[in-house]
Amino acid sequence: MTDLSLPETPEAPAVAEDGVWLRCIECGHEHAPFDDIVYTCEECDSLLEARYDRYPTFDEFAGRGVWRYSAALPFEEGVTLPEGDTPLHRVPRLEDDVGVRTLRVKHEGMNPTGSFKDRGMTVGVRVAAELGVGRLACASTGNTSAALAAYGARADLETLVLLPAGKVAAGKVAQASLHGARILEVDGNFDACLDVVQNLADRGEAYLLNSLNPFRLEGQKTIGLEILEEFRDDYGRFPDRIVLPVGNAGNTAALYKCFRELVAAGELEPDEVPKLTGVQAEGAAPMVEAIESGAEDTERWAEVETIATAIRIGNPVNAPKALPGIRETGGTAVAVSDDEITDAQRALAHEGVGVEPASAASVAGLRKLRSEGVVGDDEDVVCLTTGHLLKDPDAAAAAGNDPEPVANSTEAVLEHLGIAATAER
Ligand SMILES: *Cc1c(COP(=O)(O)O)cnc(C)c1O
Ligand SMILES: [Zn+2]
Image: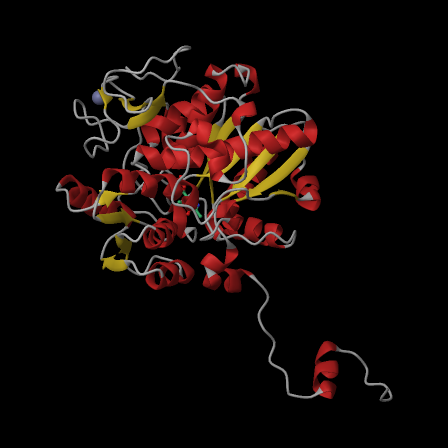
């Protein structure tokens, strides 16, 4: 049975260490967090989540960035670059155009390696250090590998990344490469890469830092904490809805856990919980399919394709955590076309917010849901943009203006611009 509500007074089981333990979301079996390396339930192989003998309250948070929220995390500090504290942009023209009461854009592309993955890695790599592992590894559509390479370098640990050959944006490969990761290009998609890395981890050859790792999601909870705090400071209320791109559904699961912990702490009323609204690309939409059919888990899509390579995923590993998050908060999931994604990427860019294609899916999805009337004109909405424009320079150049060749003279430039040549000044 899925247990998604949290107990009011959490009591640490015998396996807990410093008030932290891992609990199976399916059968409730409890595991020691830092004793053995464990990713999934030893009893039933389902997903694990971190549990604490305490819940965080807003007044405990102090400092900046992810570690401001250490009261909600397994450690006081981590391997940090530092990360978090990203802008919550105002986008008045886009807000008007979409037609909602409030639209803010939480730009996670402003993290140190240019994506929200840094929030998970600062915690995950700290756990790896605690466990004393020798080698870190991940499968990646690109951003996880860039973040792991940087945080692995910071912690002075060997890092191995598996990427789908030819399907990773140029900026991301460059990052993993320069930060010193060993990069294996696999002739297969992301899901195939993850299968291999999971097998390596099961054999004890590497410590897995994909979002199957429950500690990564703990770091990613801080996206929700930052949004709630900043929105409340600006408007005296919490947003009605958070719209986000969905790949492995780690963020969706992390945000839901963030809200459940705040509800259990009495910091958030159940009717104040933002509606989690997931957006996928039409060519990779197993979560949308599951939400529409009412299924408890997703069906694996063998073939996936989209310009939004960061969410080109057919088997979202966190679906069993994320589907209840979408349902219990009253949210929904929607698929958008690559053209809709590119249009939204341009619209964000014209507000000065530069994002990679996957990130723009959130805004494209909001537009679609607003035009269908699923999202009301009176709603306060936050869209998450997950990665920076420079991650995928090819997509940006293709979506933007073409450079115009011109001869090397002022006259030629003036003529090209259609400005009449006047007397020299
Ligand atoms: C990883 C990633 C996603 C997908 O996030 P999930 O938590 O796996 O759903 C979306 N956008 C970008 C830019 C990413 O790097
Ligand atoms: Zn179990």
